[in-house]
Each structure stands twice: as structure tokens, then as C-alpha cells.
Image (cartoon, rainbow, N blue to C red; front, side, top):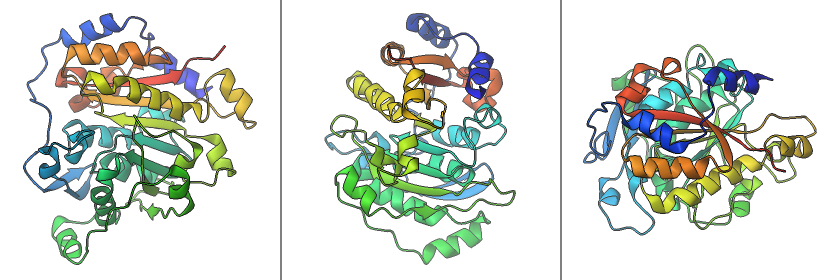
Length: 331
């Protein structure tokens, strides 16, 4: 099984969160403050994996007192690094068949940029972005302005000036969202990723919303919905203790749409492998990190992606880390 081969390659499973925390935070970590790319600019011009992107963000929302949090209103430093790595077809997820042109991926806490989805969607079948409803207007605008084929910056600006931002969408039940969902196609650049490249956003609040098969964007009786997700992705979503339990519970519920171990065999006649959960984050606070990991290893078996399998900018000495989780078998 390709998943087994991947887990063997990742090395020793994490068994003691305090040891993992010590190993990571005992390094000399660079000072990156909170880790914003630029918290004051409303527009960022980024080049990621050879693609020129114009990303709109909201410093105003970031500095507001909005209930429910504002951290998704701007782009964080780890996001372009993680987006470039996970969308590279030579990474360990693609080389071991976890990701492929047929994959369905769910992102939790995508923020306003949609950057990971914009890079990964062309290489897979469908990418579902989720976050609180307030990011909808920005993320729809960013998808609309960046789903074209890569081009030089001057050409991009000329075309972007002719576009108008899309309006936001009101929060509704996931079933209603799925019923009238329209996906935005994302085209692969030269070299062809082979995926269908569909990308869309659906609101999902970890504290108040239920994780259902409607998140797949397919009808509930469709085979795609029944199969759940191949991977659940989260990039820099862990900032405070209060959201750790809701976040981990949402990760687990999303993975259970397919199941893990024995649950997968019971749910899927086509014997789909368990959903893989990939969590990337900046190393900020050892207390918050250890609390997250202690919570995460309860429903998940967990591994750290070794630095040797990551680009230099995403390695632990740079202040970032990527973990992989697979649901524990249910008795």
C-alpha cells in the first residue's frame, strides 16, 4: 500500500508531544514576529512556483475587533512556501500516490488568499477551500483574478484592471451551498498537471458548523461525496489555545467522511485508502504547539515530515514544520 510506504519513509511515529515540542523549539529559530508577509498592504504581488499572482487582502479586517477572529484576513509567510511545496509533483505526497490528478482535497482555514488551492488545484481533480464566511468576498476575487494561465506581470496587470471583484456570499447551510455551487476552473500552465483543476469555496466554522459530505461539492448520493477526501490540508491555522479542540475535531470529522483503517474498509467498496491530514505551521509558541499536538495525536497517528523532504525555506530551522496525520483505527 502506497500510504504504508509513505509512513515508513517519514520515520518514527510521534508518541510523546512534549519530546516533539522540545526537539523543534530547542533549535535556534529565526525571529519572524507573527509571520505576516505584509500586514499593511491591500494587494500583494507574489511569484510562487513560477506563477505571478495578485492577492488581495484586508489589513482593516485584521486590525478590527471582529468576533470569531481575523487572522485569515492577510497572507502569512508560510503560505507561499507550503503552496509551492505541496503543488510540486515531485514531493512525497505525489510520488507516493497520496495526491494525483484524481484527488479531492479539502483545506481548512484557507484565509483570504486561496494561495494553496490556486497552486495545487491544477494538479488534482477538485480543491475545496473552507473558512469563516467573512473571507468569501476576498477569496472569490483572488480565485477569479488568478485562475488564468501564468503570464508576465505587465500583461497580468492589464487584464486585472479590466476585472471587477465578485461579491460575497451569505452564510447558508452546507447542503444549500452544495445544491447551487458553481466551481471555478483553474487551468494548469505549461507542463500540464493532468488534473481537472476545479476549485471553490464553502463556509465552514470549526466551532459552529457540522462537517458533512456536502463539503465535497458533489450531490450526497454521488460517488465522489461517498468517497470523501483524499487529503485534508491546513496551513498556519494554530494561533491560540481556544481553537485547538475545534480545529482538531474538524480535521478528524473531515477525515472520517472516508474513514481510517477498518472504517475505510467498511465505508468504501472500492477500498480507498484513509484520508491523509497535512498540517503546516510556523513555530511560534511551544505551549500552543504542544497543546495542539497533544490534542491531535488522540484521533490521529502523527509524523513530522523530515527536513530532508522539504525545501530549505520550509524546514524546521527556518521556523516552520509540516506534520502528517492518519486517523487511528476505531475499535
